[in-house]
Structures are given as structure tokens and as C-alpha cells.
View 1 (tube, rainbow, N blue to C red):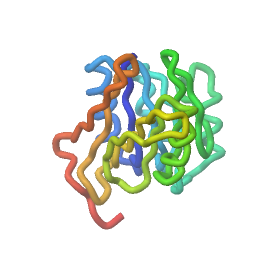
View 2: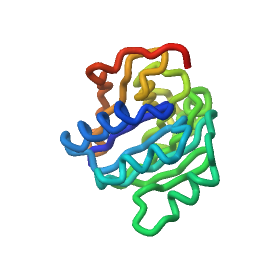
View 3: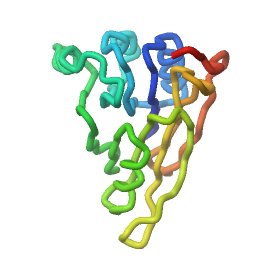
View 4: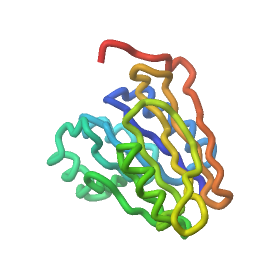
Length: 177
């Protein structure tokens, strides 16, 4: 199963939609958003793309009530998990959270096949040693909104457990936010 991992969209609709469209063309079947959507209404722009979106709120929480309502609307493709989320996709246990230090701590447990995070706007893919003698991939897709850094997201293949950071064309860093 191929997935699209995003974070820190900060209401940048064109870049967020552009990333998800490109990921869908690549074959992504689901989107994981690791927080800082800000206004839940921007997620509605993803609905026509037809992909399920698992989302948490991050530290720029925006309107949590509306985020929850959006996820519960009839026909909604959004799954709002609150502060963090446990997701099972293609037999893989995935944990999403906004903060990198929390993500690395969860990876250390060895309970997850993949841990995804955001917050610092720096795209990074790392293997974190865990207490079960293996390692857990921690994926930070950076900021799809291009806030203070180039606009990036991650394409992932859960079958092969391979992940690639993608930079959006025209998604140079925005300042002043």
C-alpha cells in the first residue's frame, strides 16, 4: 500500500492539494496528516480527491470542534484522531503525532512499524533503535505549507517500507508566519 504523509500545511490549500494530487497519481491510497492543519475547512479541499485522510491537530489546533464535526459528516473521508493516532494500514501499525521527540520515544518502544511526526518543518527519515532489538522508521515530512522551509511531503510504500521526501515545485519557503 502506498501512502502520502504530510504535516504543517498551515492553511496553504494550493500546496497541500498539489501534494495529495501528485501522491494519488503515484498510487497513494491514503493520506496521513501529522498536524497543524489550522482551519479544518481546508481539509474539505481534499475530499474531491477521494482518499481517506487520517489527521491529528498539532500545536496550531485551530477549531477542534469543527475538525471533529467534519470527521463525523456523512460520507466524510476524514478520520480525526485528536492529539495522536494509532492506525492500522496494510497490516502495519502506524503511530502519528506532531512532536518529533514524542515520535522518537514511541519508536523506541518497538510497538510500531512506522512513526510519523511534524512540527519542526524539517523533512527527515530516520531509523530509531528500539528496545526489541530492531529499529523503527520515523518519518517527518517537513512542511507541506512551505513555512520557513521548502514545501515537502513524503511518499511511502508500506509493503516495501520505503519512504521518499518530495519537494513541491514552486513551494519555496514562505516567511512572516
